[in-house]
Image (cartoon, rainbow over all chains, first blue to last red; front, side, top):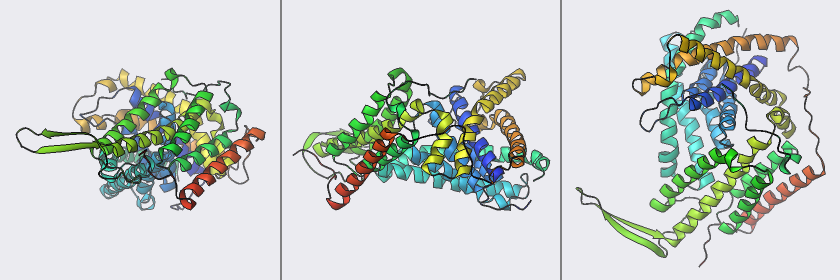
Length: 181
Length: 285
């Protein structure tokens, strides 16, 4: 079946919902399990899920997995609703989805490296926009937005993304032929 | 692992309103709040937001986590941005001004001297920032506790989102208990094989990599299930016609009043800010 980058059919609806639900549940679960972090960096491995879904199913699936998933994660954890961070998470997962059509083999080094590069770009864009939004909402200056919001979010998300997205891609390659699509 | 939303029926005044009207009100207030830095206007919005929390009959026990999150975040931002560095941007904290506190600290070994001045303007700006953040936080804090998760899909459809987008939200909510159950099964199965997620050792990178035995099976199983669900929905001609919903929402008189008040507040705020040029940073002389 011919793939299109911005398709939003039944398949994209289902996988966006699954990606969002996975992001929400795994965020909540890893919070609950108190996974030991290191220094100031807490483990937030679930952030790799929407980025992987972007790579595997396209930018729209990535965006919805990130945005809706972040809403669900905050709802489940009881943190309320923060729309600009939901948008940031959505963009963070949309960017890796832009290479969706160019991925031929989820195990090849070339495609894995492409995905890694897009993960970094996605985190910079998504967390950057969310952090800059805090300037408009909270009235903080650029230095505070970068140091208090962007840097911690960038570090955790990029490390989790760079490690777990390739692992998920290799695992997915084992079942991609099975789907027949 | 039981994963549940914070919502339960409270029979409060807030819950009588249509969810769509509540979202419209919350978004209108959000856009109104961010227009102002004048503490007198922000106090009005703060009272509106906090009264919503009281009308929702929320207890401290239930909302403690959310409040602590908001308070810690706002305190850190205000402390660093306004009190310590004297920053602040859109509000435009005036440089100079009446000094309330000043001192010097000499850094040992380096001989550097830090001269710190806290002015009255900074304190008022910090207060304005605090009111703003708390108002926005409390506006949306009420929603997860007082809005039925089963109605999110039809609510967003009613606000104007496309069918597929609203259904995606609905489906995501419905997947949560299933995925939570699958996660627990996977966790137990891996524990039986000697994998203890709470006792992962090693540096940061090793610890993240060792989350894979938990994440990969749950994710791949969910994707395989997704293929079956996609086929089932295609067979039922999903997406060909306008969708109907099990839950239906109907506006009542009080909902129209709420929407009307929201529009008046938003339009009034825009007029005050851009036509009458009021609402900028203010402090009592």
